[in-house]
Length: 259
Image 1 (cartoon, one colour):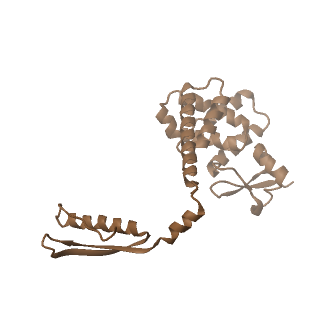
Image 2 (tube, one colour):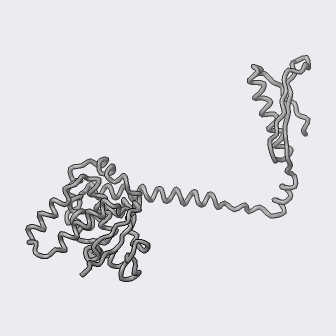
Image 3 (cartoon, rainbow, N blue to C red):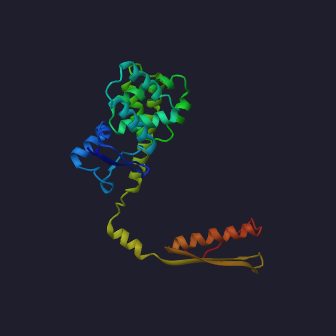
């Protein structure tokens, strides 16, 4: 009898063909097959959730295969689990998050307990460094999951989660403020807006410098875009004084032909 297989697509765009019976140990994959009918071919491969990479998928399938096989004693399963989670911290956190996304509760419990045990000997900065590959919301989800899963959650995890939540709320508040600033409504009457628009035109400004005898020293002309007459004159005086300052003239008498 030919073994049934299922096609899975990881977040790093790798398509794998795996034993259907082993893959369906993961509730997420089982649900995708039963409800959507996907995974029967390469063209309809099941798209696994974000952060479930090829490396993490292979680890999870190894875990599922061992625990799916009948005949292992409880002692053998315990020894296997202890050895399974003896990996570097970065990979352990990534494995826990992948198991969380695939809804594989036994592996979630196993990895979260190991993480809680591991972080007890780490500083808050080291814990934050381990979480560097997660965005703010995912970090909060992962911390909450670890605390709720473990029987004796780490104080450092609780404090870190509290700080991350405050940071997330601050970021959200800043986003809302910026969104409100972008949606400022000009409440002036339409007649006022139209009358002001009628006074605008393409404008330029110019200026010249004379000495105390009235002799021409320097001058300039510049286009300044669309504005009213007063703005044009103000720009003219400002740029003229800048020019005089650069030429070394610091005592000026400013005259304008505008009333």
